[in-house]
Amino acid sequence: MKTWKKWLIGSSAGLLIVVAGAGIWINAAFRPSNHFHNKKYPVLAVPDSTKLPDQTGAISSQAAGGTDLQNKIAVNADDPSFNIAILGVDARQDEYSRTDVIMLARVNPETKKANVISIPRDTRVNLPGIGFTKINHANVVGELKGGNKEGTQESIQAISNLFGVSIHYYLKTNFVGFIHFIDAMGGVEVDLSQPISLVKPLGGRSAVTLPAGKQLLDGATALDFVRERYTLDNGDFGRQAHQVDIMRDVAEKLTQLDTLPKLPSLLHMVQKEILDTNFTNSDLISMAWLFKGMKGNQIAYSQLPGSSGYFMDPMVKKQLYYWIPDRVKLMDLEENFLLATQ
Image (cartoon, rainbow, N blue to C red):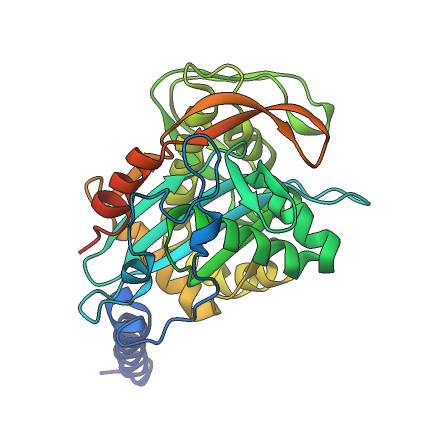
């Protein structure tokens, strides 16, 4: 056999061994059940029982029917699940930022299950030093105290108080960073069951209608898609469902073979301009892998139960629309949905 043929065969075999070895290492390092196994999760917030709202907005430690919140806070040694606060802010230059996207996700990396709850930005909660106001004001209150870090902590604490659970991780993004990230990925694909009209695009762009079926969205269009609520039959709740869909689509795109070579630069972009998070880079890769592998019955979605109402807001000094949590239904959601990922 000629020397060049031997070299080619040897090089190919070596390459296969390297690729196989890399695959084994990636599997061992980033497979969620391996990566998060026996990992000590940080605790960013624990619930303050005195800040739980009942249906009327009254402060009462018995508002949850006498539930012992400490039992919920305790970590079950047999349950490796952790809770993530997901925040999207409408960051604008020279203005304080409100959270436009608010979610709580409980993830079990071993059973590969995730339960996601969308929280309307108008949800009425009790903020320390302020009183009952909208949950999306929590970030503003924190920023007034000490900038972005305090804004994040106030938002995380408000979510913890609302559901009576500890928060271990958070993901916080802004709209400009979201656009750049989606574009750097080469867009994100969505599959629409019906046409969607985007009537108030950012940046003064003309309204567009997305047809039914699969299509690739650029960053700006993807952002308009997750913000749209005016033309949806179920308004803000429909928008929240779209936000969960985009999360899953982004995870799928991140772990595709043609995207993997871009991961280092994408992660650098994430750190620089997109995400404020306490997840490490390896955590983020593992989480993307986890969401990619989830089937329809492994990721459950719910919305915060409640009803509409109007109250005087202590921050803006006028009557505002609120989404008022239903404490009875919320208790059921906590026990039978949020904590049920095993």
